[in-house]
Image (cartoon, rainbow over all chains, first blue to last red):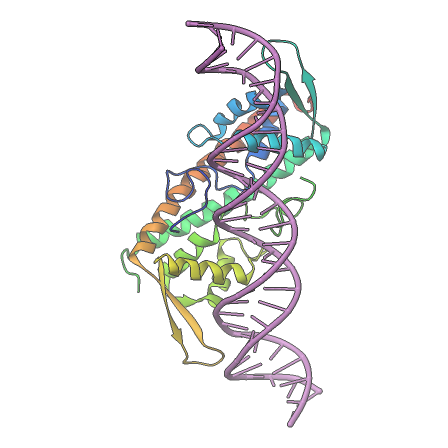
Length: 133
Length: 133
DNA sequence: ATAATATATCTGCAATTTGCACATAGATGT
DNA sequence: ACATCTATGTGCAAATTGCAGATATATTAT
């Protein structure tokens, strides 16, 4: 499109991993499944999942964490030890664990669909390129 | 989340292929790259790409086509021959062709990111399941 | 004839997510 | 005193989506 969505790196930019709707959610949950941490640290951890070149805005991370807490997927406590301002430390719950598993099932399906589309594209291009009419 | 987006089959439903933002766009363009057709027929064609169990609303298809036309990615003409109401027949343009190629590059990257996430999940689960604290 | 259904396109509208800009505040360095 | 890094959060506009409904032609059933 001419304008494209305003997702950074969306259309019109460099290929980006963020065409997946609400992808930060499962990423945060997986990180929290490995270790409990605070939002600022989770932003660093997200780079592992392709958010290095196309970082998510911090507001998205914090809001997602708060909304997941409201949904009972994670819990939080304040950590005032250590230097700097207090940190809100998140832990995943059993419900969050199940929710993550459901997300993974969805993503497997998404992956399958994407693969089938790319295969269809490649097959079509391979035979008779350049004729659109 | 509890409510989830209102995308049909989104969270809380059956795994669906529509976590990919604006995925109808490349699907329509690929279909039009193969054959010129009208919107109603394109809706049928979309089933090939995983929209069989989770159909897109017709309004989305028609609006996407109009907006792509405004962007110069496709052109349309009315077809009054044949039975039934007139049909708006779309053809992909050279610009639409390039745009589709860009979309494909994005989707390859998305596919790669998804694959890496799923691998990370599987690897993490394989060692030490059930401890979240 | 009349009604219902299939074909075909399109317009409001509200819900949701996202990104930007900005606000707040403690700790550390110059 | 001032800037910077850490750390969390809010307000707002833009964009996509799905639902509901409007419109209109052609075919089939009653």
